[in-house]
Amino acid sequence: MNSIFQYIFNKTIRQNYNIRKNEPTKEEFDKISYDIKIDFKHFFINSLFILSGAFIAGFGLKGFLLPNSFIDGGVTGISLIVNELSGFSISILIILINIPFIILGFSTISKAFAIKSIIAIIVLSISIYLIPYPVITKDKLLIAAFGGFFLGLGVGLSIRGGAVLDGTEVLAVFISRKTSLTVGNVILIFNLFIFLAGAYFLSIEVALYAILTYFTASKTVDFIIDGIEEYIGVSIISEKSNEIRLSIIEKLGRGCTLYNGKKGFAKRGEKLNEIDIVYTVITRLELSKLKSEIEKIDTDAFIIMSSIKDTKGGMIKKKPLKK
Figure 1 (tube, one colour):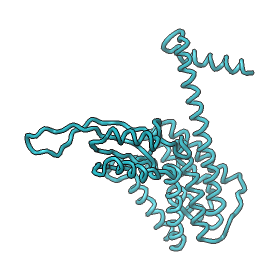
Figure 2 (figure 1 turned 180 degrees about the vertical axis):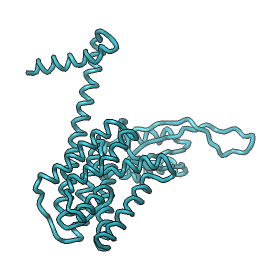
Figure 3 (figure 1 turned 45 degrees about the vertical axis):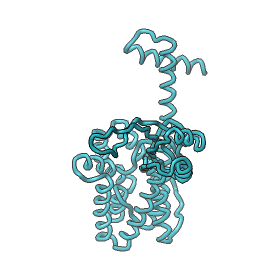
Figure 4 (figure 1 turned 90 degrees about the vertical axis):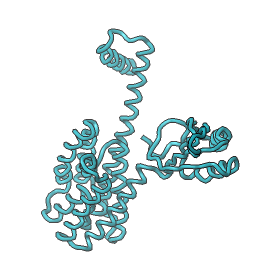
């Protein structure tokens, strides 16, 4: 069986490579094999994230929000409002309302993104329709808190897999490119109208709980995407840059980069002295130790810190749920 799989695998590589050459060398063949294996690994991990996200989001909806007539923001919120007013199937509504946004994502972001998002949304709809999720609680505060948590957890995992369960994020990206509004501002404005509609068609109390649900969900999404340990980029300007470099490597076990710079504080006509600038990326939990080590070496060192969304490679500790 393994020999048959290997034959098909090798034949696929040769067919794909024949577009450029008739016969790859052993090194080229091994390189292509490695690339395909890496692609397959990423495909498997992303698929796991997307499927898990869809099932967990379905649990948040059917186990908490739907049985208690709660709503959320985005396409899910619109679907829940329409479902409450018309009784139309929530599974079908989630697909239908997301279609225009996914079509927009096809041209705005990428074809692969659109395909993965369609699959994620369909799996979410099927899970809501077929899986008998248990109704967990009738307590309104618990519904808003944990319904939002599980919904945000599902959305966050899907995003880690390269898809979305709510098309409003695609619309936000599109509008942000055409206007001065940020993605966050667009989503906030969009959801504001949804909450106002919820207050008008359902009740003010439902709208208020919807805001709480949305807040919980959005914070959970941020946690899943960014991880518990936010990255911090640190630039250190010091006369003792080499000692600081060695301390970062030996004491913190982290990598760093040296930039060649010049001191800018000089009067007109005076020569600018050259200096090495140390740059490293650490987690927020390691920041205190880094400051302590720098202070031991140079109390006058100038330190610049900035938040980093994500990194890849190097000597940095990997985030949880790294893609």
